[in-house]
Image (tube, rainbow, N blue to C red; front, side):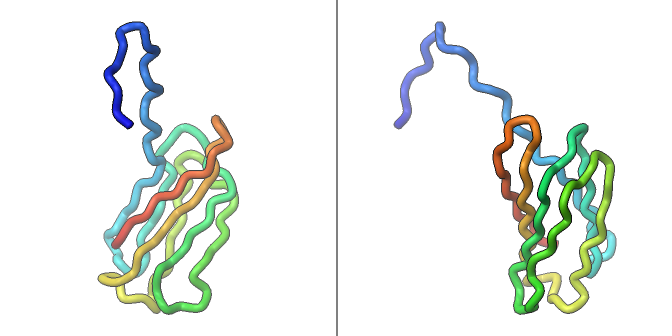
Amino acid sequence: MLRAIHPSDAPPPPAYRVPWLIDRADPQHPVVTNGSAESADFVRVFRDDQRADGTQLWGQVLPSEDIELCLCAADPDEVVVTLAWFRPADGLEYVWRFVV
């Protein structure tokens, strides 16, 4: 429910910027880069297509680390990729989806 903001209320925390940068130069092999200053923990990648091995476990992805995602068996116009990870700063799980 919406409510008016009172001047004495503490400001909300700043939004968390998704750390991922996607290089789509090769649609069959997009490169995912952790563009933040902190690591992403327990990173998992889910592909929404008909391939049997639709889940990949990447583990910890360090700042500036890049990983090539192979979408050779997928139609790049149809596949949806979901990244899930834990942020060390707050221990929460985050999920982000993208298309090629």
